[in-house]
Length: 184
Image (tube, rainbow, N blue to C red):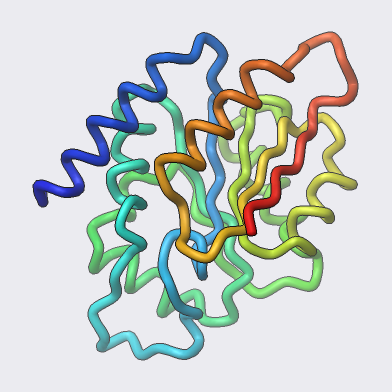
């Protein structure tokens, strides 16, 4: 494992350990969330790359027993899957919902829920597109929902803020579990 990835992982583990309330599942989009491109603009023959902090964060979540899943509306699932395989990430995800859809990921979340049995109020969601975020919020009102919209993909400071917000706003007796954080 690269030294930088190990450093990010170690820092992310420390961040996660600082919080008492943790999600059971974290769902990530792929394009412009975990990697800096659209799959449909690439070839399967290319060697993909992740945003700098992405792999360390994924490894830290897994180490701390937090499941991770993918919800991607990519019209080129074959390329996305090939890239996940090339990056040795495929075994990390409990569910990989990668397919084009007009439902803005609501079908993706239903399938993830069906496969994992994780309640929506125990999930966090990272996506760079507001339309996906809003659709999931309106469909699954019980989703503890935090999203990111940043230019540099998933980063350590994003995880800190999201977990802090998750810890301090989660109330299992409340119907208002969703929170939407927008990073410009």
